[in-house]
Length: 185
Image (tube, rainbow, N blue to C red):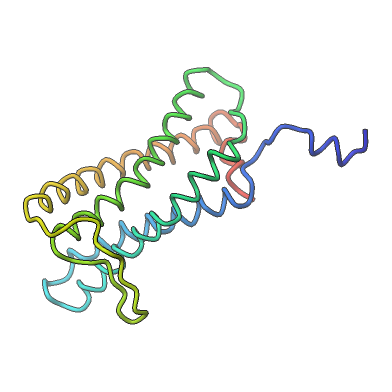
C-alpha cells in the first residue's frame, strides 16, 4: 500500500480544521457575550455604553446561534475522533458533556432572542439594515418567564463551560493524553 493511502486509512485522531474553527469561533462569541453582559451592569441605564454592551451581547449570541447549526450538522455528518483510551465512564461523561454544550449553544441564544421578541424588541443592526424577524409576538408574561430561564441557564452554562475546560486540562496535564491537542490545528 502507498504511504499516503496508509495515512488516509488511519482513524481520525484530531478534529478537522472546520470543526476546530467552529469550536474556537463559538468560544470567542460566547466569551464576548458573557463579557458584554457582565460589563453592561457597570453602566447606568439609558447610557450609550450600556446600550453598546447589550448590543454586543445580543449579536455575539445571535452569531453563536447562527454558527451552532452548521457546527452541529458538521459534527453529525463528520463525527468526532475516537475517545482517548481510558475508563469507559470518562468517555461517556465526555460525550455527554459535548452534547450538553451543544444544547446550551443552541438553547441559550434562542431563549435570548425569544425574550427580546416577547419584550417587543427585534434583533437589529440598523447601520447595516439587518433586522431579524420576530419569532413570537410581544407578551410580557412570556418575556419574564423566558428571560428568567435565559439567565438561569446562563449561570449554569458558566459551570458547564468550566467543567469542560477543567476536563480538557485534566486530560492534558494529569492523564497526558491527546484530548486537548485534538482541538488545535
